[in-house]
Structures are given as C-alpha cells and as structure tokens.
Length: 223
Ligand SMILES: O=P(O)(O)OC[C@H]1O[C@H](OP(=O)(O)OP(=O)(O)O)[C@H](O)[C@@H]1O
Ligand SMILES: O=c1cc[nH]c(=O)[nH]1
Ligand SMILES: [Mg+2]
Figure (cartoon, rainbow, N blue to C red):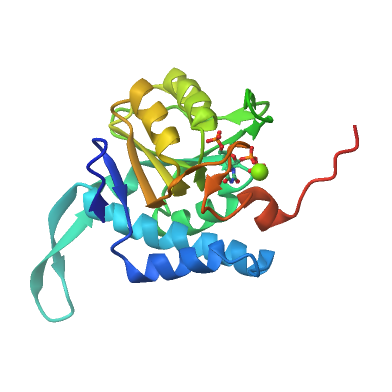
C-alpha cells in the first residue's frame, strides 16, 4: 500500500505486483467479460485483504490441541458495511465479502449521464443503519469525475456516523479524487492505481474503458 502525497488519506496498491498484474488484464481490450468479472472479484478480495492491515486488531488467547498461545482478532472486520454502487461494483463486492464475511450490504444504483453535465441518476437506494463502530466501504471500480461517489456519499451521510468511511476503487482520475476530498476530507480512498487524466467524455486515461459494459455488456437503449 502506497500513500499518495498529493492528498491526505489516499492510497494506491501500485507496490503490489499481483494487484498490478490483475489490473493489467483488466486494462487489456482483449479481455472478455468472463475474465473481466473474475479480475474484479480478485481485486475485491486482495484489496480487501490489504485493507485489513489498516484495521484495529485485538490480541486474544487461543488453545491449540497442545497448549495455550496468543492470537489476534481483526475487530473492525466484524463491523463492516459494504455499499455496492451498481453496476460495476457487483463483482468487486463479491470479492470483498470473501474477506468481510460478516458485512452488512447496502446497494445503490447510480448511472452517469453524458458530458459536460455528468448528471447522476440514483433511483434505487437500500442502505442499512450505520453505527459508530462501523467501517463503511463504498465499492465502485471507477472514480472518474467523482460525481457518482459524491452523490452516493451525500446519501450515506443520512444513515448515521460510522467510525470510518472508505472508498474502494480500481482506477481513479486525479480530478475525481480532488473533488471528493474537497467535499469529504475525512473519507479515505484506496485504489489499485491513480491514472493520468480524464478525456473530454469523462473516461479515465489510460483507464480500462467502461467498467459496467466490459463486465456485463453494453445495455440496449430502447427509448
Ligand atoms: O466518477 P464518475 O464520473 O461519476 O464516473 C464513475 C462512474 O461511472 C461508472 O458507472 P456508470 O454510470 O457507467 O454505470 P454502470 O456501472 O452501470 O456502467 C462507474 O462504475 C462509476 O460509478
Ligand atoms: O473511464 C471510465 C469512467 C467512468 N466510468 C467507467 O466505467 N470508466
Ligand atoms: Mg458504465
């Protein structure tokens, strides 16, 4: 895990060769949707595992079949709420929940409109009550303009004040991180990599394309 000095509370996993290899496969235009989804599940699992390194640990006593010894329990792992931002976070959540098996799960739909407004349509919102001991992990693979996450974070604030709010993504553009950090300085951001910039349509460069479409296929517009 690497601290990104441009902001406070922003981390990347550029120092993990395994995470970078999975990211490389996701970036590859020839990766089909089965492999793309599998890659997102892997990243959810391994980035989730890395996140446990930032969590509160308690020392416990354990009895092996032979004798007593000291062990640990990652306390915060028991109090995790994963917020899944549809669509692209579905496979990421599948990986995360393997590490945080006790997690309560919220689901929100968010769809970004076209440039230059990038209006966010959010029609489906199911978020559990957030308790002071909770670590909320907002899973969304792509942080581009940041508009989606700002809208989601504004909504989450209505459900209680957790111990930590974490955004877990795959790729981010510096513009999106700056916008989120400006409005939510306390929110921690963990991404596999911070990419270079956004193009005029709001796509991350070099990026991996449209994460939702690559994982599930492009939706047909009928009206
Ligand atoms: O930071 P932003 O500029 O708001 O863009 C990021 C959002 O774009 C994608 O969702 P999209 O709207 O394409 O929906 P989808 O997951 O259903 O494809 C992605 O999964 C993020 O939620
Ligand atoms: O590059 C991008 C930007 C927004 N959403 C995506 O899926 N990809
Ligand atoms: Mg999309």
